[in-house]
Image (cartoon, rainbow, N blue to C red):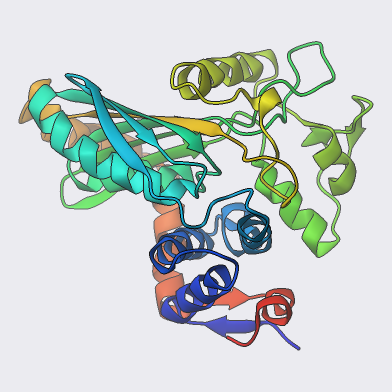
Length: 332
């Protein structure tokens, strides 16, 4: 059996069928498939098809409730809380985004906390959706333990992604999407699946020593970007995405990679700013000026451009479904 390159629509159908066969409701399976295939198309493979097997295993075991229905509650004039109900994060995040679009127009700034959640995928995709609606957006998400406190050896913080997006008139939004580790942990999962070593400097084994073995890295901790500064950012995200919304801290959460254990119970926080309430019409011109100053320099590019280029290529050429997934979930 060989890998197969297929259109994005075919890939989405394949992922959705696999999830539906793994105790996931059709609409939820569609939303998850959209997210995984978009990440794959954008070249964010650690959040793409490499996640399908672990997602399916968790839905089958009940670690993730594939039939959960998220709910949203307005808790104050400009704040919302979304209960993901231990289901996949994507339906809950979608509910938060739609509510934030409406609320930020009334209040100028709005926030949505999400609790009893799960892996949020490529965080940049969620803020991109808000930016395409004309909003400036920030997202914080906590993940199961992966980073030790500075000077320690045992994980206390997650890789804890931070994402930001801002609209540009007539163009794709600026998107910043990063974890506070040097690389996303999904890259290590992908290396393990492919039987490949990881580069030096990405992670530490359980003994706190640097490792290039992905298995040892998954049992140990990730290196934080910027060393102590990255660890401080990880703590900040824990407070915003877990403490503030009532989710489990990273060291309390079960992992995202296997069907064993209780639900991860992680959290997310999304902030949306309506430019009309701040700079007003001047915001569009100021963003254009900033983009121009960056792009005037030879070799400089706006954050997010590479993923848009990858996405356009994938829309033309498709994405590749690995033979192992076809063997596991059936023909494409």
